[in-house]
Image (cartoon, rainbow, N blue to C red):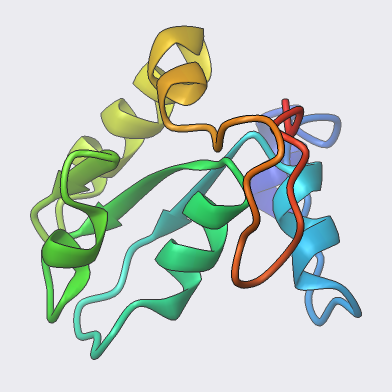
Length: 117
């Protein structure tokens, strides 16, 4: 938290901890990142994508297969690649728009209206 303050990112970064609504958390953010060094099946990635969030994740376990072409997959432990992928998605609406669910699409985690902007 000190680093967030030192870099003057208090208005841009939220460390929420435990939340009551996963859907609300996904919709409150712009992108989702899963930076594991070991992972089984990445439900977090699927939930984020179902709620219309572009994802950045590491190529471990079943992550790359789950993301397919709907996100950016980087090598594990490569913090620069994670940062570059996050910056790319935060700076460019096109991939985020492309990966949003269509209006009226029913998500297995949430009901999305397609307006999860």
